[in-house]
Amino acid sequence: MNKIFHTPPERSSLGKWLNYIESLSHVLIDLNLDRVRKIAINLGLMHPAEYVILVGGTNGKGTTCCLLETILLNNNNTVGLYTSPHLLSYNERIRVCGKELPDSIHIEALSVIESVRHHIALTYFEFITLSALYIFKRAKLDVVILEVGLGGRLDATNIVNPDISVITNFAIDHTDFLGINRDMIAQEKSGIFRFNKPAVIGESCFPVIARKMAQYCGAMLFARGRDWNFRVYGNKWIWWECSNEYKLLYDLPLPIIPIENAATALSVLYWLPFLVDKTAISYGLQVATLPGRFQIVTRRPIAILDVGHNPHAANYLTKRLPVLLKRRTGKVRMVIGMLKNKDIQGTIYCLSHLVDVWYCSDLNVPFSASSVELSDCLLHCNVQIFSNILDAWNQAVLDASFDDCILVFGSFHAVSPIMRNIMK
Image (cartoon, rainbow, N blue to C red):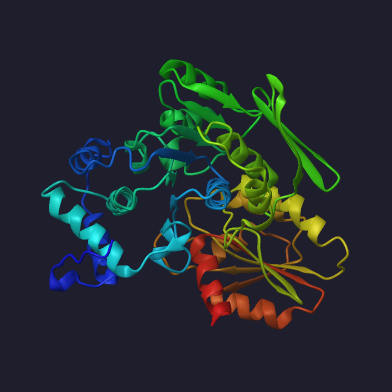
């Protein structure tokens, strides 16, 4: 992994490389995967590890991947993890054995992809996905976990041959790409299923089209409520396989991440060809967490960062936040910034009964919804508008008492600068 590749001087740093490949994305290209697959085959990247897990879904992909990584590392497996997008640094996207990699490794991988692609056009995400697969292949890992970027069928991660495909849930988001209803979205997401391979679904009321897609391609459906399930009792919970009462895990500690995602991760472990120790599972449940996902960053006032940006994610907050705040009498102050292509009205509607004061902000990135557009969905509410998300955050902090809650919610572009500011 320490081999040095000489890159063109004008793209010698990782930052310059990323700027370069981002500039390539402005070229209009065919979105089928043949281009990406051709490069992957050329480099032998179609199966980048002994075992490959491909995780899709509308919400909860990242936390499911994070828990799988934590458990498997504590089971003494070597693991590669590819997630997106990043909050603070590109290096967050690719981890090997739980660690981010130095810039030199990323530059090496990007330079290899550049050297073999010739005149094949690639989007930014396709380019970096290939580089991740190259890094994992070189590392000779036991397991690689890949988080789908968008949808499934046409996502760059779908060029691999996964041993297990996972869909956490089917909620409405990215309707301009995936379709306007759950059936259309499920059809796109189910495109990651493979013949004679497990297809784990983490939602009990999933669209029928997902089952039909599994039947059509010959995948082995393993769905919550039908093939596996879980139940919470007190401060413990149990997971079981429905067809075999002896295949169960009991007295599990409650996870930090949403329990639905934790149960989905355990359903993936069920299909692995090697034993996963229950001690590793229990440890993972107690420590696995992901930055920006209901992340508590201060206690007085309590401040939470959450990159949820659709009604499904907002609805989850409406269940979890009151439990956290049940002994508090202060106000809930929401700092929010979203992109135009999201269901802004539906998302805000889910949260409106919980929030006392809204701090709506522009994001100053392409396709950002303006603070005015956000406030237009909040008639008769206590609203302040800002042109900069840090100004919104600073005002919320200034206004808050020790007993209040400040919730930063919405796009990664809203959470990232505030997280960076807090970490200074």
